Image (cartoon, rainbow, N blue to C red):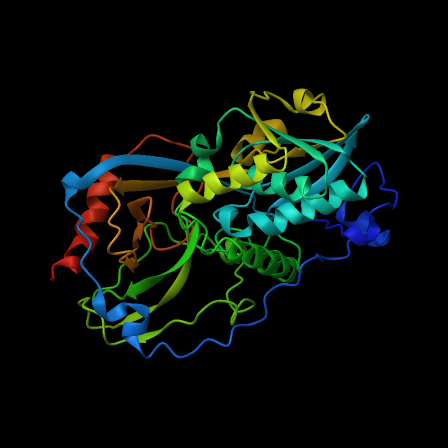
Length: 403
């Protein structure tokens, strides 16, 4: 991956980009811009009432509350997300895809890195392909430089795969295999994550609460279950960022004040939550306020993408980049969410026996995570599975048999 900074805005850019050539030319300078937030001096959360932990209401998980089941195909690259520029003939093309399950979390950091690529070229007119989390944040970041930006998308923002995401801060979710990534990937992803986190914080308190912190609990099972899909081998271990980001977010502690049953205890804390309907709407409004346009248009091939108008083209097509960029390393990761109507007086989440239950302002979701990140890897099916929902519900519903 190569990363450009605004400090080299007018420096000549070679026609072919590789990580080695960029380092050799002095262009891989790391991410700069607004300072990332410093580690938090977070007070102890021993006062349960201050955080609402002692006043929880049980989530109503009655099966008849189900309103829909959605499936998202996450775009995973074993080598890590692709952030790279190339010149095809007279077209300056930037690739920004393959973020696995970290798309919403890392979107802003990657968007600002793309902005640095484009700004270095002096581009005044830019076309972005894709209107999901990556496309919207990239469009905004580039428009902030004064460039004219048009987003072309087959699927409008709330139709895109990003709209079917879990909606939590998860910067380590499937960002690459340790055996396939560059040795410094963790350090580079840490910069991206800190940059993204700082930008997400600017959306706190906006109308509709696009971003907020809500309680989350990990309720240990009395009878731990093995992962549904075991890890194949050590080389396929996913890269993690947890330790590198320690101190960035509010801490988790052992909880003795929750109503959840479990002999092995409960850990809990506050987690950044994305109410994706409100967040997407806010991003669209911000983009359009800067003169950005979103047009429905299907870009069917890499050749067609390279012929689009603009001083620069940015590929934010997610899993569709497998076709547009001819990238057969891109692997689908199926993720299904069962949705129930919002329960606004009980906004919190629980993880238990491999199941995530999260009450957001835009709906209550139930998701089977399989016990590790290998669940759904290589599965491109987007067909809803009612049986998966019912099995997940059976595992987690007993946690809420209290009043």
